[in-house]
Length: 116
Image (cartoon, rainbow, N blue to C red):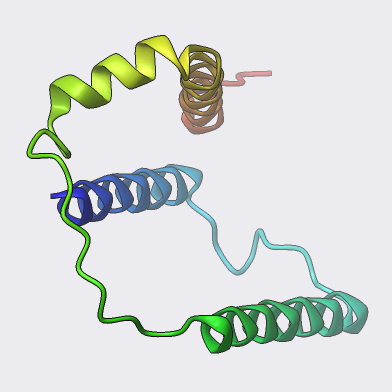
């Protein structure tokens, strides 16, 4: 059940990013020219990310232990209790961050009529 929630959440975030990119209406003509230093630094950062992921996957050892948990794991009611009790501050901070991102997307997408 947690995997399904994770997949749905990530899908929603990807749709949000695509929506923002669509609203920005970026073209090749409006994009500034990037120097070779920026391209090289991007490649180095990408290689560092790949090396970190490979190192993390190499450390993981498969186990055959079956963990039996409580039947209430994965219920939305329990998730709500945890979010609004133990993790209230991070939950509210993330909601403010998402609200700020939505307001920024609306302001960037807003067309200005200048008749000067």
